[in-house]
Image (cartoon, rainbow, N blue to C red; front, side, top):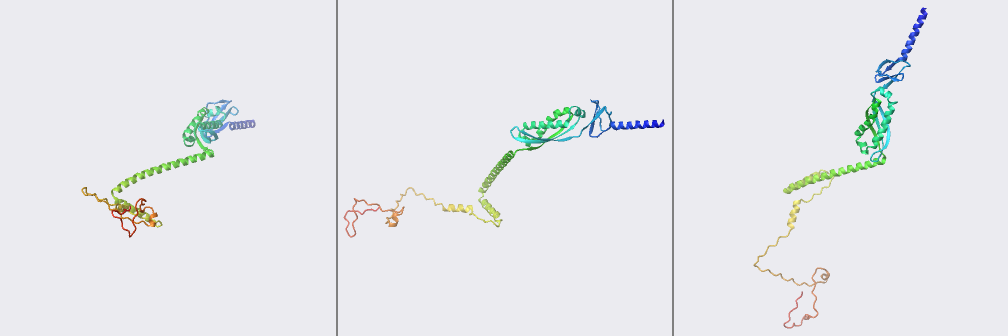
Length: 317
């Protein structure tokens, strides 16, 4: 009798141990347990720690409540300004309602991934290339709103969405490089022109100051000579002082003629003496030539013959 009772106790303990092992569940700190009893959802969500379920009647599903980092595969699209790009992103989300994540959607990870891909394609088509490259914060916010709207019903909260990389065609990269180079050259020319304008204004002010004191220009010339002479491998060409050139210019100017008094009669200039032209000077331009004689005029008498009375000597022109 005692032996049979002992065997029954051992059997009961063994059955209890097997039942406990089958019903015992451990929920981790970052997890929540959703219990389905005969296929129906129980309202109580099991917290972290040790819990029990009815074997064969209840089923416990654990849901991870940590933030999940999911890369979004690169998507090819055409921007609003007709540029083909390839964009990939990364999405951060977490489950805030474990029961909805189990009941409302079959696989919330796959659903969030597909929603992120379609939203990324949509945001590419609505944006310009400049916005994708420089205004990513605004695009990230718009992409987050597009994914978060349907994910709220799944018990999932989108924490953050980031556009990670934008790949451009090689032709577009070369075009952008030429555009950037042209813009930098334009800014360099504008800065150089502004510097020339400011320098010209300062030089005009310096010239006006030096014009009041002519010696200042000579001192400035000497300072320039000293600065250039500091280099031993340079050849120094010293120009004449400006004041010396002005003095020579004034010295070469002719004296002004003195005005004659009104009562004195002007004297007639004496006629120039006639010069016999030579053979060499007759052909040279600019020399005096003898005036041609008239054929009807009588020729001069030869030497030794008497000149008729009353005749006058011919004047030589």
